[in-house]
Image 1 (cartoon, rainbow over the protein chains, first blue to last red):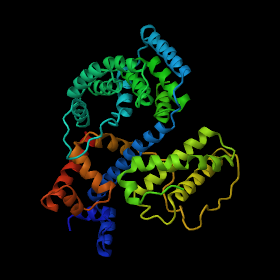
Image 2 (image 1 turned 60 degrees about the horizontal axis):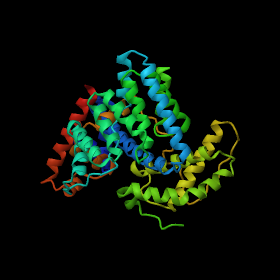
Image 3 (image 1 turned 180 degrees about the vertical axis):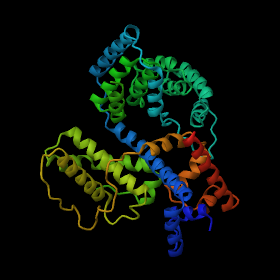
Image 4 (image 1 turned 135 degrees about the vertical axis):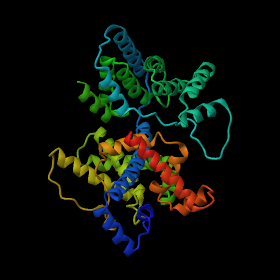
Length: 235
Length: 179
């Protein structure tokens, strides 16, 4: 039996006694077989981990407190401080390191607005924009999100456009979009600071990134554990 | 207690099903965990971790059928995590007793997930694959579908086509990981 089929049977939990012996023997003796098996196990772990991330984000969203007037004042104050930071203290770090760190932690946020449904063709602009986003066509997605924000002033388009711009290596534009998004409270507000912190990191605005990462950690919001890791690395 | 979803429903419509379970049992879990003198924010973290562990064990096939209510599973895992927290923080020497003797959580994976560098890389690169590749690999590795199941679900002509497609996707992923 081909090695590929043997590994497939393992994952299908359908190995008979003889195949199981052959499988274990190959795992011990054949390094190519072992490497292939390990890759497939890593794929399984990676997929489960990605699924857990989605559920975790959902559960964390359920824990968000109702927004109060004080909350908005704090937000505005934070925005001013950050804005002052942007123009005042533009500290340079090693560009390569920061970009590497960004690449290590950056993942486009899931489309939670118009989840794609297989076989269902809907052609309104919103669905089209998110379809481009889901299929990683970030240039077209960014243009669509920009048009949609202009037309509707719906804040989450700013967020998703910013993610596209980060994918397209335009951190400055992403920062502008995410800073504009700071005046809104919507279903992705919780996640915005994480991406803004990463955008600052990519643009080498280390102090702004640190301030935001510290805020994420102290409030235990989205990705606070990853924020701790980054902070340790850039401190 | 709410009417709990079946294992199939949990896997198919996990977001909604988990949200309603999460909300339904939160107050009871808070009350239960407070008997251990924990802070609210720590309890919330533990409660979320209990749900994520439960989900992970559904996904990796370690829970194949329910031998008790989902609430009992979540509370048993939650209690394990509370004890783990207390042990780590040296607050208490604890002797564990099961919540419900009908289920055992000894065989489950309950440690907080820490991906190796390689697994993290595979995870990042997996997201760069095309949608169809992601779908096939998800159906196979994550939903435990056989190649024949995938042929039926995705209307492929035969299982050889599915097998070739899956091999192509794995090769592509391997290239991305090794690039």
